[in-house]
Image (cartoon, rainbow, N blue to C red):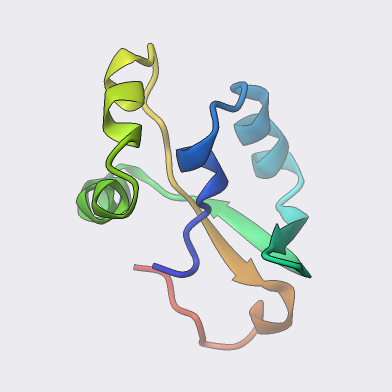
Length: 92
């Protein structure tokens, strides 16, 4: 689960973030006080179905937001850039 992008859970983000990540999968994120380069991958419907219950278990306050949204909120898998060619961490 550590590879899941929690920002989409914690704050409402305009739909453009998804388009941006699909076109430019490399990003920099801040985790605590640590900045890291990551590569993003938008997860598909099957992966979302598997991970969504786990996501809601981590951030239950997101479920009401997701129910009000007029779109399905896709999870985004983040992998440290240094691990981009390694086998770890593996996505679901």
